[in-house]
Image (cartoon, rainbow, N blue to C red; front, side, top):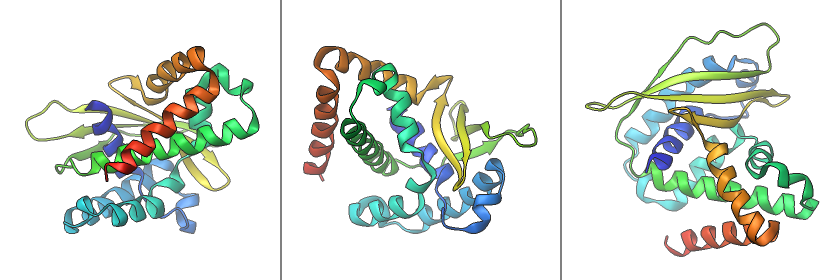
Length: 205
């Protein structure tokens, strides 16, 4: 449940039109702050979006996915096994991991309950290209949850490659299970497991 919750906040915080020229030039914290309320407003005002998978996936494709470096994320999650995978296997891993995260988010989005995100000051050095944005998720009646977003600057703008909630890294969390599966059944075994999970989610729509 915690994984679903922080993925929800993760996508909400970073959902913004990646095609906007201004977004490419904005500091990562400014970009996130500017877009957070816009996306939260869409979710609050569109009561249908939580229950319409087609509309939900369209929103994710348009506003969320461009802010991820899925290749970097997958490479980190697979860890030392990445270099032993063939180029085709690497492509398959990125595709299935991307689908897994999107479907997990779409499930989490249906549980959104007006959480707020508070940003901590970002101490960024001139020319820095790898930063951590520190925030807190606040929901009435619950203890604030610290959430850290690791981002890298690319030619296309700032991209997310990891997130930590209560000092628990999303990538590290997946790396443990990925490594266990690869050690047992190889890279193809992991691809099969991810594909089966995604197909099961598709069948449950």
